[in-house]
Amino acid sequence: MRFHALIAALIATVGVAQAQTFPVRPIRLVVGFAPGGSTDVTARIVAERLSTAFGQQMLVDNRTGAGGNIGADIVAKSSPDGYTVLLATTGVMSFNDYLYAKLPYDAFRDLAPVTQIGSLPLILTVPASLPAKNIRELVTLAKAQPGKYSFGSSGVGGATHVTAELFKALAGIDIVHVPYKGSGQMMADLVGGQVQIAFDQISSSIGFVKNGKLRALGITTAKRSDLLPELPTIAEAGVPGYEATSWNGFAVRAGTPRGTIDRLQQETRKAITTPAVRDRLFELGIEPVGSTPEAFAALAKAERAKWIPLFRKIGIQPQ
Image (tube, rainbow, N blue to C red):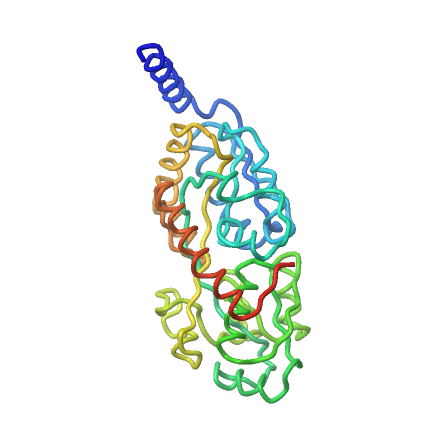
């Protein structure tokens, strides 16, 4: 017993030492979405601050595709040392294993939550040329011509996809999904009228709304946002029961020493709550959180329990 206790004490000592010295080299931050989108911008804002805090560069590495799964798989197969970090999204952490029939990783087994960075409401927008001035008119338009109108997303399984599928189901309309490799091209086609409906983050949409190219019809959260207090929730605007919020955070390879995870969590929380970073995140429509690893893990499990039964109920099948 004494021998085992001694070994345990030595392991704990090593873990503390690693946390105190971490990091001693640059950190790779893997982002599973295209450069320029709000997920990528969030990563770069936080990485810039953490590079200063750590005295080591946190370098953003965009590995796009499959709803963030390509990037997640890279982190899931990395060394468990905290030097490869994932900008984790709702889909990756909660339900992509349902939406994609065969994934090379298991988020709950292979990834360790570090902290939730923020909560991100989405807004429903349509081209200014579309003859629908509000949610009720949009639903009426879509019901009159089933299958005529389409919605864009930044990829299968992402927040821009599942929030639209929820809207489609609760509103009882038939609209066609058009997936893109990122929100940039999706928004360009929305402005051009190639697709007629999109759910995206405030930062990606608001510029087009302000210049009159797009019309914002509703926000996905249960309550109105302080950033756009005049914009009604989708539920109050005509689709009762609708509520969906995207979120993101950091995760690392499972097995990473707890001391290293705590160091990443603590410094990230400090970074996103500094006035400069907090204000930049608010401009993107992101409410900073900075949760503990346990709270982030609980969020991922709660979202899984919410979304997967809904997918089954409305007939979304794994691809």
